[in-house]
Image (cartoon, rainbow, N blue to C red; front, side, top):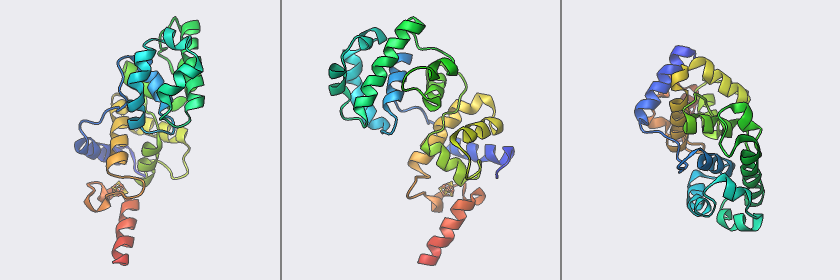
Length: 219
Ligand code: SF4
């Protein structure tokens, strides 16, 4: 396992590779981000970004979404996976924003998680990107990269990955680290074809070294 110092070395190298890493869900305000993140579960940010302009044009506020019918919402998000459930969730979420939070997106994890369709990962993305509150959202990229680099234990749960990262990384870097790990996993250390042969982290990556060895044996 990489200790605090080695972990920060690895993260710093990633910062250099992806200095512009940022959230890729297009949004204008916390309401739009919250809805976009709910829609992004088991779907790509690209597919969500294609659908949300028409969705937010039709339902620009929680008030307008809360009173929409499911049949009005579905055509706007039909290109996104699990759209039927997501239509129900985003409407129920908008209704609760009105009923319980005066139409505003709440700023605590506990309150966010109490909303329909919102889990810990979604809550953390909203905290970090909508409000600048330090949080690390663990998605498939964050989990894969941190396990390959042994920043986290291989058998760590998603919550344990988050807690390990919070222990090893200074709080002021949590949001940037979250985005950078996602860019690193999405564009470099990908699930199927990690680019170990050109990876600046190879020296500290057991997984990468094993892959390189296996690759050279195949040749
Ligand atoms: Fe990922 Fe390979 Fe780099 Fe390790 S060496 S971090 S597995 S790309």
